[in-house]
Length: 75
Image 1: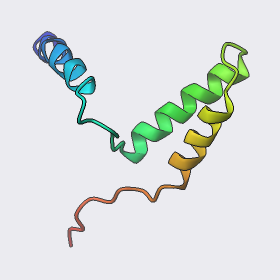
Image 2: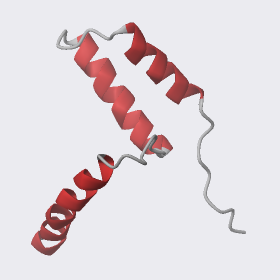
Image 3: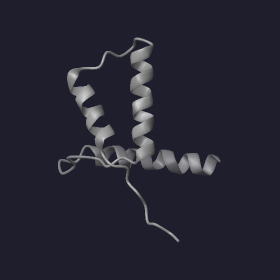
Image 4: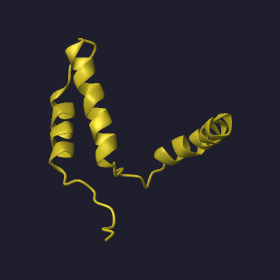
């Protein structure tokens, strides 16, 4: 397990640098990633540590409206 964790940590710096590139204008998230983000927003709002701005609410609604990404159909 330590090997995998070390590999993940070594990739974080490059991944973070990539997020700050000028050409990056959006990120495609999987349905599972959107669910996790939604869970965190809802939990933070519920326990009172985050009050969502109108912009954040609009962004969440836009994410919810996106069709789920489907991988290749096997069968």
